[in-house]
Image (cartoon, rainbow, N blue to C red; front, side, top):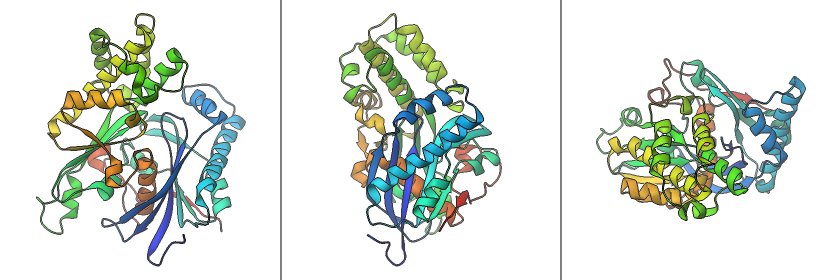
Length: 374
């Protein structure tokens, strides 16, 4: 399929904090912000292979030479080329947007590693990357960056909604209903969008699985489901995850939660540790969302496959967690789709971060880094 007159084909690529693969989405966009019309065409998830272990080690503080760092960024760019090529077929994208791999995040310092030039060379279209940099330069946290894209994709005129991403960390976006705003007051509507980071999620659950089960993750949350909740373990983890424990979110490392795992892994069986972790994560999310009231709750990200986690959230909040699939966006590709949307917005001069959410002290430039080779 070629892009039709007035529409664009955009590829969005996302590598999350779990550092377990690349999600690639192809979307068709029509119109202009804020009435951008987006159609998800297809997506693919590609394994990072040997790069995963190298990136995880580097992100966790291993020392590399300048040559090794350069090679890692180049290889990540080449891996993106392979992932994109795998599903493009005859399509010719107008824009490819690369999130890159978060190696370090301690605002105002942050690094989404990738060498974009292999992608530019292979596809001959605009390549946009470094989506967080402008917000960081303006004094913001650079995260979360998805609320504006959530607004474009999921807002409803009559019903408020909450979109929750269950990735390496949990973040959410609250989208108010639009019928309380006068016609034409789209800026007022956007100004009332809320969002933020909540707590560690798959980073902890997957680490428990790797260390104690010797498998990459708890398939379907079945091991957690077979466990028994340990109230003391839940209380100890909650103390580390609650909003007062800001380091776990601003550092993006999960050190506090990993310390909890080190303490309990010799005291409890794996299934009880996983169960207790699911309960604590669910409780933290419930406390974060409670002030927003009972509204439609939609989930995306890999954590949606952990049925025990999702069931605990439903039990504690009293709300059903629906998949973004019912809103025509597959949960595993929501972030990749939104990276594509943010790239198009940035390319057309729209500031993609919301200062009220990221804490930016001034307007962030709208244009991110872009390379082009044709």
